[in-house]
Image (tube, rainbow, N blue to C red):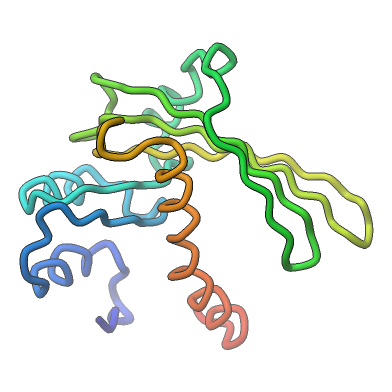
Length: 168
């Protein structure tokens, strides 16, 4: 769906989903821009599930997630990857939630990414949070890790386009 010049992806979210038939049981992944209360409510009304990344644009939710006792949560998934001139280890922790500041949230996710640049040896650590409406029975840690990582197969071409053509 083309996003007009005087708007952004947020306003196109619901109209785009409304063009699709029967999203019941479908998992919709999105970047932080779509971590929107109204988007979650709309997906729930369609009986779809969501996995959203939580960044600074949702300050209260991010603060709530950061305050969880993550050090007490055991490591539940670990993956290694090599690409783009770096080695990466992703460590994932998940906990069941009931009262998050996000509609339909059933699990909170913490991902700690450790990247080592192969040429320089520079190490970077980044912690990313996510929320999903999937219960622990519907998606365990390894499946959540695959779904979240899989989202970037959609985002990567956008990044390439935006960088190559200096759009966005």
